[in-house]
Image (cartoon, rainbow over the protein chains, first blue to last red):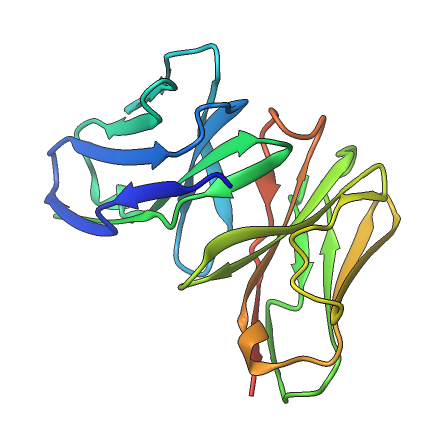
Length: 110
Length: 114
């Protein structure tokens, strides 16, 4: 069974600093990996999707890398802003199902 | 498009009562997913449909849970009878083309069973 881990569970950073969020997974036989954002009381918004054949994806200030062999992905958010405060979830697709981590709860301090 | 629509947004019920959660996927999407989110277990897939047909219900916790998709624009998740341990946020998501493609999530239904 695929296990997805995100550490730390919560973190705070001052505005302007770069954010680095880590995700690890136990089974490297994945189809893709996705990063989602979840705001309190809301659903999930897809941020980036990395296919298994790719090493990274970028969208604006966001960059996600994927190292399948080591079972790791990293989400970088450059020059963080208070509006980036949210929970970020990593999800791995394999065996026709998405396995989610429990998320990194991020607070960006103005 | 209005996105994935779920109702109700909040539901409080007493143990033993029947609960029905509703979902309207994005028009044109052929896959629909039901998830449950709790602090302890995080987000878990309960069941998913392709073209209104249930494909994988291995995540449904027990026989008290059932899901239907009578047409392409509507799905229900029913819990009967409900128990306090069913308290969670239930999300519906839809996508075009299934896994490997972006899933769009609804706002969720927060269920509290007393």
